[in-house]
Length: 336
Image 1 (cartoon, helix red, strand yellow):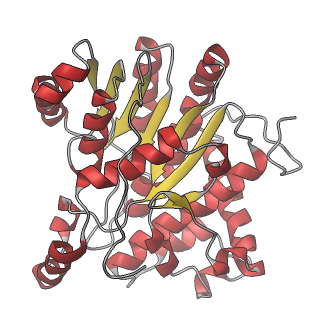
Image 2 (cartoon, rainbow, N blue to C red; image 1 turned 30 degrees about the horizontal axis):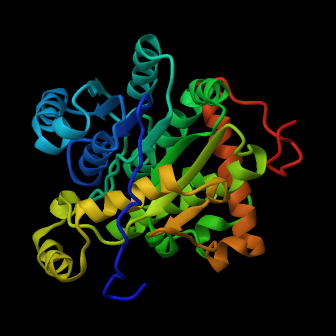
């Protein structure tokens, strides 16, 4: 990707989400906050802010409702704050239970919450924390809400949407040609136990898992009811780099000052993936606003082997926590 990011076009006028219900995870700051703001100005009727910090989420709710643009465009909007801590499966499951008890429909799910830890940490599940937050909890959240998304699609006669925040940085993953991809070695176990991986590499590993899972998902689950995709907004001026040690934070922030996009433009990219783009994006990563061809390593024999391993390991773990769809065993993405 070039150092200077290309211009991003604004969303087409007239997007109207009246009568729709949307969930945004990681909604209190950065891209998630701006996605929430733009959904409201696009007249979404019910917005659920899925947040780790409830008081902060409530403050954001009040601030959004008081914004002149929101009050003008969507005076009857309903915003609800629900707790979701993507660092543990139990919180994801509790969030889904509470949401289903209060809402019958779901049209848009933005799985935006993400982290990049400065040092290796383990989540309560035993998984490396980047893998848990950026990948595994998104899988569980998506699968647990699929029945609601499917029912809503049947009612409306059009597909509902799930959009994850991805990254082109997945190409910096340690999995490509490294010992982690040895035959017989579990991918998730390797990433949980690998030591001495730099911060950016661990983040890239988590984002590669997202890409691999969605590509394989599209082989087993068609887009007729739910379109699942992800987007990379490029470098964005958010507080995510605040966790960096000072010797990294200073140069990274200097680069951000020169090339980073604003959260507003990043949210244009997010809403394009979730609202404007069509079924052709199912299972794919959009770089800015265009579908990107999978990285060459992913298309290689080794990449395809790892992709299937990631799918099998992930679905095996999810099977104990959520009712899984009846997957297309032929792998052509068409419903049986």
